[in-house]
Length: 310
Ligand SMILES: [Zn+2]
Image (tube, helix red, strand yellow):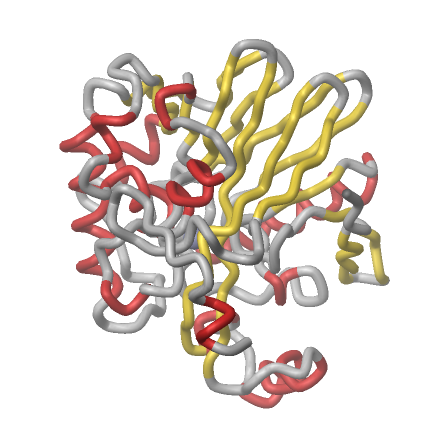
């Protein structure tokens, strides 16, 4: 696409970023019974491919990337958030990376894309944070966002997650050097900004009719997934429990996992659950719109993306 076409409608949002005139809307909606689920792309996070599989050989990793016509060194992680409407409740699940980290300038689009879809931040009644990594809380940390949210917005985060970030353990993670300090900073800023809005829960919480969160741990000790269930239909937003490589290789540990062994167990349990129930699955870092079914494939799994319809 030429720059001329890209810039035909140079529109900036009121945070000064261009994009309201972007040609791709970057959102996709499904209906689960009486509940609407909209996936929104926050953009992509370029990261070394080594972060996708810290416990396997270079050869095995290369094979997966070769099979998918991708480069062997760097991989653009998709970053998706979800917006869920149930009755009079509007629930945001995660918030994207925001603008706190220069290197991730190809993401941080969530707020702009919500607003260009006609969703005012003031209409959001609840937020669920799957975990407090910066690519999930960063959007809420952007200057000006808090002022647009309603003062009594409820932000659901598991109690374990809040406790973990008081003194986070990175001993089992394998991340680029600059990342852990940025993660600590973003988590601290989030708690500082939203302390009064955070509603902590233990294992599960019902956020609205047909919408609940449950703790899985693993990726972070208090990581949760969000279940949408209505009229016999179901979708689970699994946050960072499943990555693109994880269907074929559910035992591949991810460099961002603080409890990699537990993450593997929880990942396999979620994949089995989706395969057995036929529920739809969506994920933060699976290619947009990231909604699909899971099928068993021997000891592994196969992801079957939905057929887009309009
Ligand atoms: Zn993430």
